[in-house]
Length: 224
Image (tube, rainbow, N blue to C red; front, top):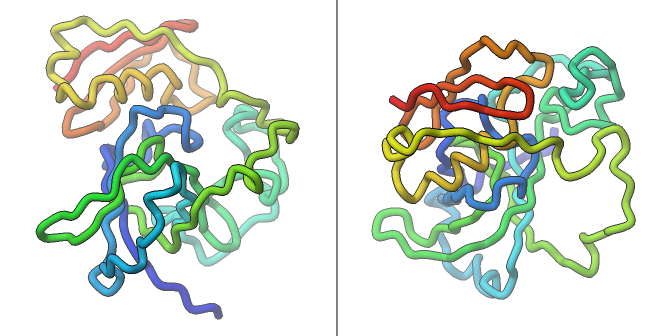
């Protein structure tokens, strides 16, 4: 066994897994905050971090911890019907439930109660997700424009047109509206569900958003 320590948790607008973008960086308007555990609230550990625009977050799929694992999984990108090797996917159901996300560092702020926190954008993490490590993104080493995306393709899948009546959008906190529309445009539904009459519910930023999808158009039905 290799000892690991949770150094921080993330605070995001997703209380559940439903609706979280399938990869980091797809919705830049999504803001989240990395809050360090008391043991790691030492500002010296952040010295120099402000010089980097992006970070790697290494984290645990805390809602997908299992005692067993399978060598193959069904990737949502393939409709959930085709099995691929687990190491050819980013499935949470792995021998070690560890995730990796690249986020933009928006700010380092000092909270009176929490010490220094990191404000990031583009995170694809559920609220409360444990962070195991943080590393700077290095463009000269981490960017490979010529890389192949395999069966996952590119650009994170199709983008839907979102129709949301103004009176419903006004029920969403003003600073969260752009992020919500971005999340909805990425089609939050499971990839194998295509019923145009089905109404889905998604919790986001303290509201419950209900919507349906017909073709390439997502229509918001209610916001409570």
